[in-house]
Image (cartoon, each protein chain N blue to C red):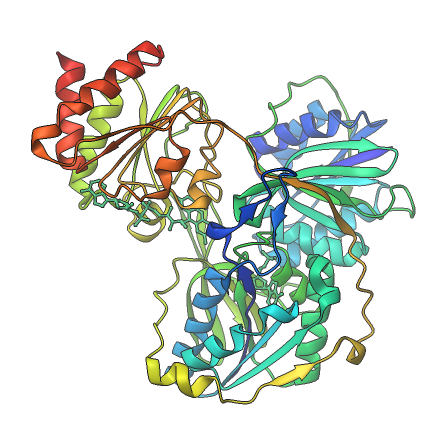
Length: 309
Length: 256
Ligand SMILES: Cc1cc2nc3c(=O)[nH]c(=O)nc-3n(C[C@H](O)[C@H](O)[C@H](O)COP(=O)(O)OP(=O)(O)OC[C@H]3O[C@@H](n4cnc5c(N)ncnc54)[C@H](O)[C@@H]3O)c2cc1C
Ligand SMILES: Nc1ncnc2c1ncn2[C@@H]1O[C@H](COP(=O)(O)O)[C@@H](O)[C@H]1O
């Protein structure tokens, strides 16, 4: 049984290696598009690298065509794709091309006699489901069942192999033009933080984030924000939650965070959840171990004062 | 400019209840609302129409209790709504959904631009738009945070590590992110008028699509984490000392 993996991001690629290994395949192959140095590095992690030579910048339609060619140049029964904003649409399009199903937002997977079974959030993060991907495995050549693995759920693998590289150079029609690529600032990494203090819309001005940062620092933790503060207001490069970075610190403190389900879905595995909110009805209190009803502009300075004394 | 928008009536996920015994979601009669990003996709289509003229049509599929979405679609200002509902679609997966949507779109015909949400609020698969694009053989641009059209379409896409500014020929398919716009709130009179406006219904038998899902949900459960729910009220200046109780608890927990 062959598992093929693909991600444009090297850390996530190494997470996919671990996810693939958990299925105990006979061999792991990797598709690498465009970047030769990535292909060279990838050899250390799998038995075979299909290097798709291409100058094209990313667009889902063209990358799907190239990944499809890589699949056809090998014989994977399972294709694992890094579940990023770039990876998922490519996987979904390849799924149509190979005529096999694709599961997305996958946080765990296993192979049973019944086929490939994955875990994913359902109802927008409210619940977790077990989902069977395809009625059976191994039915046709080069027709893999596909899963997009959510970043951050598998430990990145270490180098243990020295696979061969095979080059392919498919003809791919360029369908869209890229006018500009604006790189984003790289935000805080939250993987190793024991304490995370998150600011929500209750924080009124960007300058006031310093209050949240001060509290985080005093506790030896890091500060984060909810989606609107990052994606709408651009106060920070990334956000905590289901569509941002899922976290599981020892202590999570939400300050002026309402606790909508998409945010909760990303903090649910924290050991202790604490909330500061002016509204006693805020949903976050239902998910909290500790809560303070009150104005964050009074409560946070008071907390800082107590911690300092 | 002919624009087709894919609009899903999602479950209102914030309000889903779970059976305390089985842990399974209780979906019969559960409240629904238009999927958050789809509302933005429709808003964006209306803004494009306001700028360059044209017609905004919507396509929706789901179970019969999702039909109410049409009222809201019209109240916001769409020109024509197309809908396909059937009880058999309860277990429809992204493949079945995308196949049916693209068949509906083919039947409707003329289009320059197809818009959708990037991910639906309840399904959250991020797949349907990419699959519709693949079935219709259209270029696909995901997670748009801004769209500008003239004879081509200029789309800025938030792809995680960077913002990609694309230029694509028409027709093409674009999915929109939550932050692309602030959708309008329909007026009361628009809502009243909307309930009388006719819409077009398709039926399963109009299409040759296999409805059995390849993604089969085996089990669903609410993750159970018991929380202590120890809440103090410090809403009043005189009660601010309550904060100390929580700090003490955190110290006892050995996390600070
Ligand atoms: C598909 C999808 C994915 C999403 N993914 C994410 C995600 O990953 N992460 C995420 O965060 N969101 C996500 N969202 C958005 C989410 O639904 C909420 O809109 C968002 O989490 C709300 O952020 P907030 O709590 O900061 O703001 P609000 O909901 O506006 O809450 C602000 C809170 O601050 C309180 N407050 C106001 N003033 C004060 C004060 N002076 N002192 C104390 N409290 C005060 C208010 O009572 C309120 O509860 C997603 C949405 C969708 C549709
Ligand atoms: N049943 C449906 N009816 C209409 N549009 C849909 C439906 N399901 C998904 N879509 C569209 O596809 C987008 C992504 O959905 P999903 O793949 O479920 O995350 C949604 O935001 C909608 O625009």
